[in-house]
Image 1 (tube, rainbow, N blue to C red):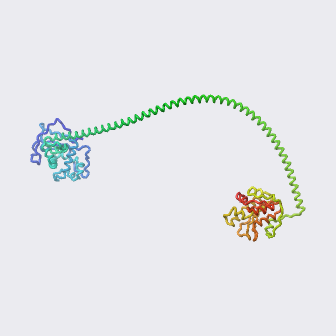
Image 2 (cartoon, rainbow, N blue to C red):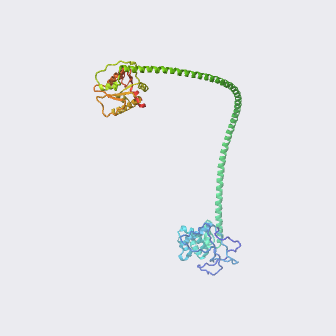
Image 3 (spheres, one colour):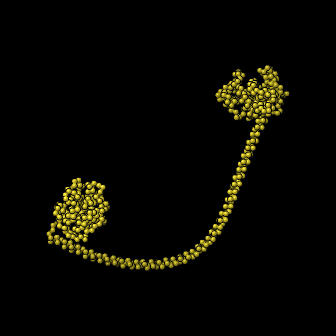
Length: 512
């Protein structure tokens, strides 16, 4: 926004100046000249005077008579020059700098609070009020001009005389000329504006030159990059052409391979048609052979049915003969029992051995030693226990120390006796377990049904008691002795018993 009203070339030039009031002149002499207007730019803060309101400012452009101002021949005031922005800011800065040095009664009321601001805030926050007051109050401007010229020294005196050193700052000269208003001050302001515009144009030209140099540098860089890219593209084009040649050669080879493959496929189709014909004939032959095989199978099934009928009749005859033989043997046994007048017995041979416990050796009774066998197979134990009226004799500690050695003796006995009770309940056989001991142990669990527990007496081992139990059994009764002791196995084998290892019973107990 321009600081003053636009300059009008049709207005008359500046006339003669009258003496300023307070400087010895008559305030009524001469026609009044309009005051130059300092308007603020749009960037100048108008609400910056937040500390206190300096009061309503005079309207910009309201001209007041100025001392030394002349009239034009037609009685019209001179137009205000257009101030460049740097000149306007310098005028406000000079006024703000001398404002605190003025006496309080010489400072206009709107500027009294502005004069109390800090130096760095005075021109920034009070610029609009200062500009308006300079325009509206010629007396205030003269007082400010006197102090500014005094501070400017030789430069101020030169400006008042209408001449300015060539080396002086044009902005400073224009600001002093505006305040002092000497003859030719408008030309000084115009020269300052021209100088400022020349500097701005020089800066613009320098910026354009710098941008042109930067664009030239970028263009050179882009040309270098383009050359590198062109080299890369040429190399890539050469490589692509080479690959294209390879692909064409591969394509020709693939076409030849395709033609050969198609020829082989035609030959394979012909062979396939031939083989299909052969397979059809073979399938027909196989169907015929299958029908013949089914006919032979039907004949074989018929013959097998006849054989089954014959075998069933033969088995019926054999069953009748076996039943008749067993019936004859049973009647003979009944007759023999009646002839011998044998009464039913309540005790078994092992009971007599357990009751007697005599130290006298019993007479060894002969028996076929061929029936005694030594094995650790639990299936063999099951086979022997399946015999009628079998008697199982167990070497107690020999079995428990082999299978439950980590337990106490009481827990070993309890576990073995409990397991043997299960076997007696399953098989219905007689079971006797023998432990070493001078007297009967206390704290034993209740003896299961069908299990007999014996302890050897003082001076006698469990091995000797086991051999005596075997000798007490009648010849022909199956007696099974479980012990891993080789002497026990050899001793009972001589008396017709079946010795088995301890592992066979342990596996049998684990399975139960």
